[in-house]
Image 1 (cartoon, rainbow, N blue to C red):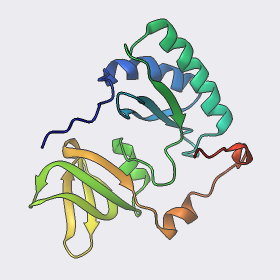
Image 2 (image 1 turned 30 degrees about the horizontal axis):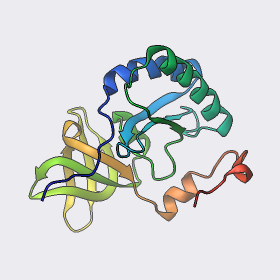
Image 3 (image 1 turned 120 degrees about the vertical axis):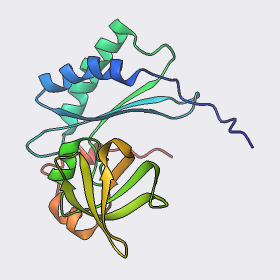
Image 4 (image 1 turned 90 degrees about the horizontal axis):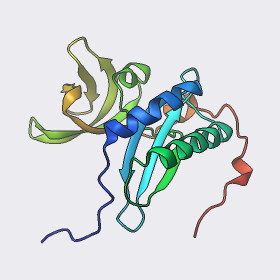
Length: 184
């Protein structure tokens, strides 16, 4: 069986990053992730950013970054097809995309998916111990013990929603929360 679902446009993520990162830094933010998702009928370029001191981003900052990026993308036109731009915070069950994330979030639970199997498995859930000098993420997995996962082999990774994570990530500000409109 072949997958016939329309795919999102292929984009040059390193080229997009080169355009986005200076704008993110100019606003005092850090870039967390750039991803393109959605099918051909609804492609979305997602930019995740955060304030380095709080690991959060407010609605006003998202708006400012979105406006700056829209202007640059209109000028540079780095994506041929039409797409939607989404600027957001990483959220509570955030993706872990940078080496520093594994130090910053040690002690919390994560799900890590590898690009190729290790010991017969591609997915590991456990408590983050950290990242070592050899660029390996160390994860303490229930029932299987400590696993050493090469950072370069990680396909995707995210924090798992737990009571400890909720307690550690209380919002600093709920400004704009009453303006959220749910679709559907």
